[in-house]
Length: 414
Ligand SMILES: Cc1ncc(COP(=O)(O)O)c(C=O)c1O
Image (cartoon, rainbow, N blue to C red; front, top):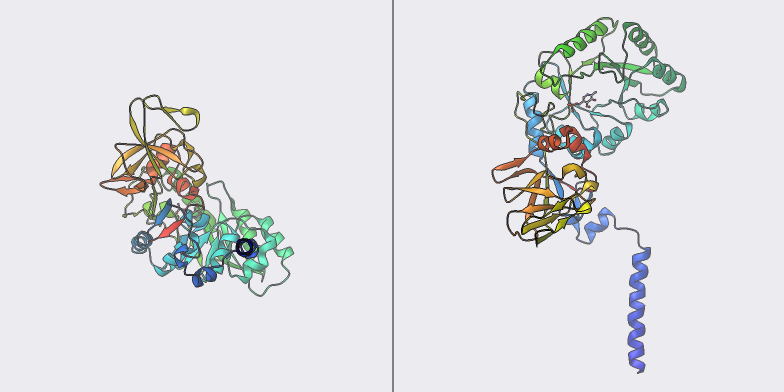
């Protein structure tokens, strides 16, 4: 009896020790995982998530798309990789490193935090922030040698007032609103005053001037040419020409090759997608960098009259095989994708019933085993689901699909 009590006491002690260790130990760090032999849980700079749904990102595709554009660049023209919005959903730091190795000489982001993320990851090349930053952040922007977009005289005046002194001059690109109607100077008068104020101050370096076209991806060039005319008028009014005068996003670079620019701000086409969707044919081969993969987590046979998912919007008319996939609208796999098809074993399978937050269901042509690969975007057999196809289904553009894949979907780089 005494020995039984003793054994229970010792076991209790062990259990309590284990429990309190779990409660009080800090979460495992990267190095902790290494020393415990769990390196397989690490991917890139972050922890690999334990999911059977992932975005497969091809570094080769990014390189291919960049090389193609590099071969078309005019003399003295630099290629900047646009990696805002987490590299259009592909992972900003990883894509920036691939692009740097492929020879790009600078980067564009939209936000200061995106620029700082790149600096913290060891990206030392020029970075242009395309959005308007708060003047309160000028000291860090200057210290990190970032270039900023300036679109109003008020900003310059406030920056002058609030910036007492800093060792590094703030690198400024003046944005010209030639028809986009978003940010930037619209008249010669405004631009002249902005130029004079910037060049008169030791706080600033007048590094660039640029515009952004609203219709570079359209066959009708009337509006594009109007914007170009306005841009030339504004540029001709400058007393000092800065080092960079740039106009080209992907669409301008692809379909308006002759327009002079000394930076190409290459975004969507670097990720292998056509800026026009399917409207214009790309003059170069674009290789999509992202595929979206999942697998069947449950397979069942349903009977006539059985319904699928919330609202019972799908009702089987006969005996059907149905598979469940672990992806839903919380992953950016939007609810209105009901009716879209995905690929199983090279065959089209329709998403039936409403897409849930974390899962959705597809109709299978026959029984498949749990664990069978499901290609949501990408190739399987001789067929391919493209981002454009999803965009058409959702009545949107390919940009919105890739940017919408949420962070809980692991990115696997191959
Ligand atoms: C000012 C500016 N330049 C370049 C780009 C890159 O455009 P794209 O992805 O079409 O190449 C963007 C993207 O929105 C932008 O806003």
